[in-house]
Image 1 (tube, rainbow, N blue to C red):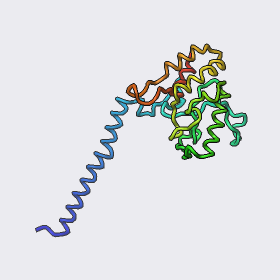
Image 2 (image 1 turned 90 degrees about the horizontal axis):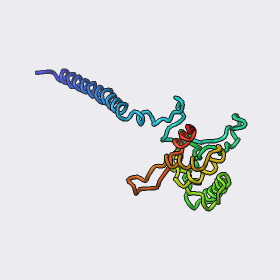
Image 3 (image 1 turned 60 degrees about the horizontal axis):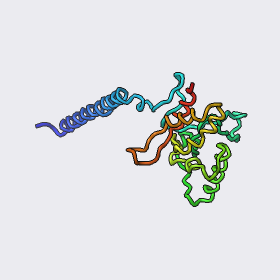
Image 4 (image 1 turned 90 degrees about the vertical axis):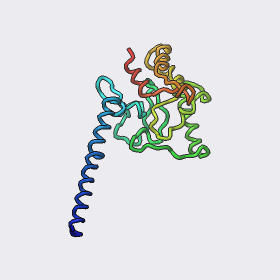
Length: 209
């Protein structure tokens, strides 16, 4: 008959072997398998849906970004960056499109500060795009929940066509076609609204010959 001590030792050794086996399976083999399948079948998505121009990574199609004019004084933290008129502009972001501070403003629709901000944004967008404030789409003045949404409505993209075309010296029809080519349909044909990925649209604009 085996002693209680030897039984305890055998149980611990069995448990240790099981720990090592499952560590190899779940901690090494499974992650390698999933990574391999992802790289083989969904390489672009697995690597972050990166957007490249001339071989250089300029962003991700999953994350919005600012398209602003360079600051006059890059070292001045108080200087407010101004949107660059030659690019299509994204919707506002509570975190300034900083991926480390993703999130919404958490202000309710009746919040006086939010109402004031929206009015100011609407006036600024209308003046920037040369349109009536009443025609400014809602997403042009409201931030997304994540603050990193790269998509805007087709209506907001269309509103910016004239300004982008004029700034770049292009025909509006050329820019309009570019927007149409980069417009995504409703999910399943009826869910949501048509939308445009601003990052992809501006990349297509940059590559326009």
